[in-house]
Image 1: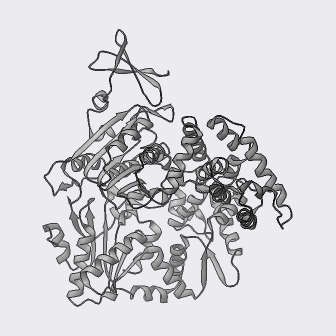
Image 2 (image 1 turned 90 degrees about the vertical axis):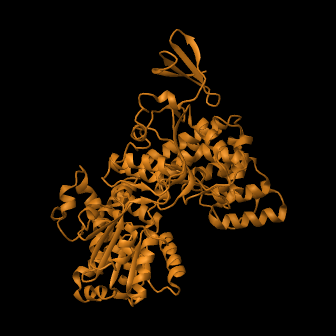
Image 3 (image 1 turned 120 degrees about the horizontal axis):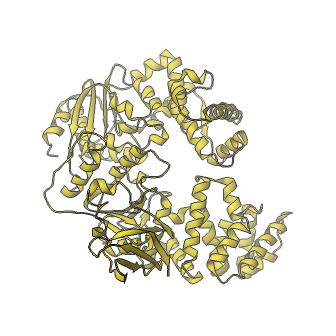
Length: 637
């Protein structure tokens, strides 16, 4: 690679002593670190004595590949912090460990707390551990806990203590049950109590490099410090991309790090206008200005749409399947209408793990009930396997295997309800399923069908009792989104859409993803949808972290960036994100400039526009050049 002056300074530094590299998005930091490591090896440093810590497994695999291509035989130790410390823990204790299953953890916390929704409790336990809170000490001796402004923090601490006790009781046959975060937490506790272990890890490596340092927690930093106590310690990060504060990451760790300071301020990803927008956002976060390497033209724009449906329709019309494209959103449920439009047009797309509306478990269950009622016999058999115990009918896999055998012998799906099953009590569950489908078949309206399934046949209660991966508020939002969808489509259209979801292929350049999961990635064209107040920034998240999330979103784009906002989302009035006025100062006062619609004069100084998709009328007051939105701006026509 031909290095810039900033990059060459880092490569030639030899990474001696403590170093901090402050890099902007797209600055080529990975390539710079590969070159710096290569130069170390060429100078005679044993590659086995170099440790490179990454934020994720994917990033580890990417770095290993780059080092292999550059150095040849790669023996640099590239690892995530969890993998590294878990390896140390197992080697030191000579014990076997197993990570507690999510549903067992959830059930345990529900029993202890007496609450069905334990997502926040689960998160707080991880935050406690990230800030080195211990069960065998007075919590108020811990600075984090003492300064924590939570009314119920004493109750949460008691839940934490009881959870740790009960978790130990789950251990059996010499296998210790742990949390995912315990890979770091238990290793650290062993380190502070065992000087021989401290000496061992300090002598493992001569060079320690940590990537994505801005998302390091207090616990991670304390544990990693033992690896670099007398060694060369280099950290790389960008304060503007700190987006995991909710998981315990602390910006203070990067801000307080002492060492030789290097900067990578030139982006090789974003074109000039995108870089200009990024700098406007950055000026509200830190004082590091990004310079674009390019001077060619790009597009960065804002569009205002009537509703989320018209937003999705326009975005899909603009997507070029031959170009790498991201559609990014703050919450997974926002992907719904974009997915539907892509499916309607037969355009393949991929989603980040868990980043699709249709991948949510309750959504999959609802659509599999549809397939069970309206699909072919073969489709019904596949659907049966998904919903047989939603809600719990105590049927299990033994029923499904027997039902499938019965189906293949008789070639008629309906016969499975009357087969001879060898497990007692199964008849009741089978009868419940049959009655549910018979009652659902009485509905002509998809919306009524959905409401009956959710609230009369126990599906909503089933997921409310589990709340796996969602909060009760989110569950209600998902059900509301489903209601909005089912109210706007026929049974035939809904089934057609879901069949396309099932057959959708991942061989595509189009990616739908949450902003969090897009970190570290880039694409030619990026659409950031649903830039509405209450969504981005999220109503329940710190505004400063949401601003950094917005920065991450806009800096994914190489050539073209489009930010969209809607006046109506799921039939409810929404307002533009205040972040849009940061990148375009005139947006708040001249919103109509970004809203290209034909208005009709209703009466003197009153205008309206009717959305052809959602059938809502939008009213405004004022002259034609400068419309002012009426507070009573929505009528359903």
